[in-house]
Length: 176
Image 1 (tube, rainbow, N blue to C red):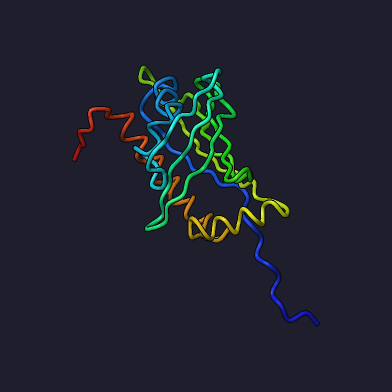
Image 2: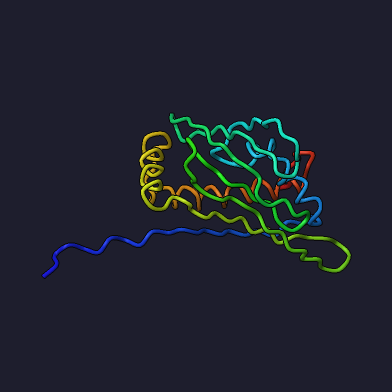
């Protein structure tokens, strides 16, 4: 008789959505400007663009923090289809970590444009290389795979709300 509980199933994908009162082209311009990511992401604190020939598939370094822990990731734009989708693949030390992306759908009501934005995350840490990536995640970011899912979901909600505020009111004024 097996007295051990079965291993909890791992979450490999997350999505969160928001409706932004701006046309898809405007939202896409904000999202695809990766240097602005620290403006809305609760973990990303800086982005350094890497030189390259093809601007639509550019690479960048994301500098991140979780409390007192700091780490960086190598990111490469994998989808740049204005104004419908923008995504990038994340790796650490050559190990695939995740795909982060945004899908935009025109949600026009009457004469004002609005965009339904879905942020998604796909975990790429699989197999023996994935186990090493999991260890690096614990060491540098301080999160287990289960904690990473919770952190990412909370972060996605925060990211989308900050993006919404930034795009809907680029002057930074807040309404009561």
